[in-house]
Length: 501
Ligand code: ZN
Image (cartoon, rainbow, N blue to C red):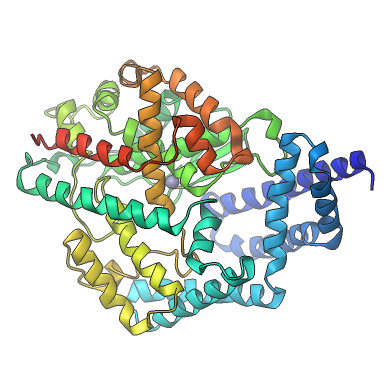
């Protein structure tokens, strides 16, 4: 094989993969937002044919040979091409590691488990679902063995979602986090000035909330000609390429804060995708590098920026213009405190910034034991409830508000939850580094987000998948991942919000 021909094939392959990704992505997005109810059958057929075609395009011997040849000649490739080959080889190895019939069986198991989980949650009946969690954990343990024979299975899955992240790092991270958060939370409850949130429980017309979304997107620098907003049950971000990113939100008439922070959170995800470098266009590197880094960007905008006093002061005049009656007797300071209220609760997705990671720790502890095969289906609810009591001090009254609340396990994902917590910790470290070089607070106060966007583009966004998470953190902050920044941030922030001395 000639090298120039092989490089041509590499480019063409990625272009074709991009075509499938684009088509599949638009169909999924359409299905979630605009498609009529009965369209799912036809869409399902189209999607399964597309996924069969894209599988055939990639998982075949010619691609295997092409990648092997390019790996042998990696010294003659540009660094970008070498990374493309590295990334594709990793995907290729993974795809061919699992016997086809086991892969299909797992897809069927996930599908079935998701349907059973929905019913179980709806009917608050754990009994039918518990066995599926165990079967999924068993399959994941087996698959981990295919990916990396001999390695500790849970660690293999952590690495899948956050390349390079180890169980040791996480054990240490969560232990330190718990040591800091639990007493801090207790102090907010015993010594903190109470926070009034009753004014939030009014009617906030959805039409005005839509106007707020447009305003917020413009404010944080989202280009409306390359990113639009839709409405779905659960907010998310999807990207077809860097010039076509979609975010969604959910409007609640009795709670404008929920959608406001969904828009800022998803906006952070969108900004990352919108600002990958042009040189990555149509390659497998043209997207965010990992779940943890992605979540660090969304949470940086949602929490570090969006829940800061400067940001609330900045947007308060706009809020008064949109909701003059509802906010007539409310001050910006009251709103700042209300959006930062910390309160242990049962549901992860509704948790505040301070208690959120405690919810993740419950899942982390259980997942480790599940994948190690140490738990039976019958033991799970009681263990969940015990950990919730231990970490958050709350009593779980039923499984629908306990172990049945999340979709992840039924969808076959274990080792994924920690990246939410890691993302929050990354964002604190990134923010601290940015503050050394920019007057971030001053920029937020004056609504000048351009320098913040440039900094993040320069340090993180432009690289897409070209670099691993650990490299990006060190590049952006000058040091390896260090959880201390997050602990300091939480202590500072909640001492301020609650007036702790
Ligand atoms: Zn997110």
